[in-house]
Length: 176
Image 1 (cartoon, rainbow, N blue to C red):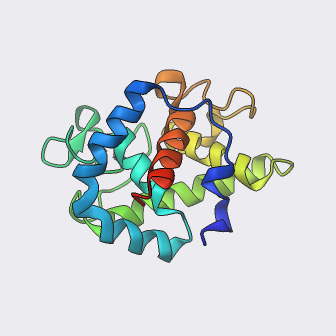
Image 2: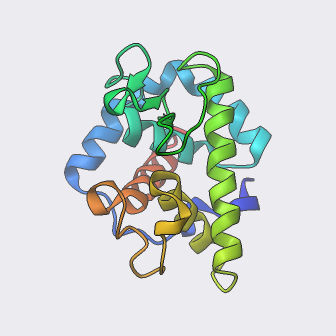
């Protein structure tokens, strides 16, 4: 079980559009080569592998939108798009863009944000903190101001809803 940071199936989401579910389905095939790393990292950090699959799908289309591991105009690295821009996340890339070590680094960043959101909003339940942490992974915890508008400053204004919907889709389909 991966209940330490919440049950992805209990996180509220506006759901996936037809287009999002199509992207998730296409990415599921691309992700097959990362399945063992995703499952290992999920077990190591206590996070549902379906959430990793969803972030990989949203961030890099499971690596399909990367140029030698780089995305976002050279500001982000790897499958989960770790922000290396000094004016952004300022992280240093760790290992190969598709490696288990990269997934560990990105997961440590995600866990950091889940905990920051938990401290910032102690009244939120576990699943709300998880969703807030997903939004903060995209834009930083300083941009999360309320649960009702958790995606207000995220890319596309729907980052956490989209990621949660994809994760729930992967979980329901049994892909992860």
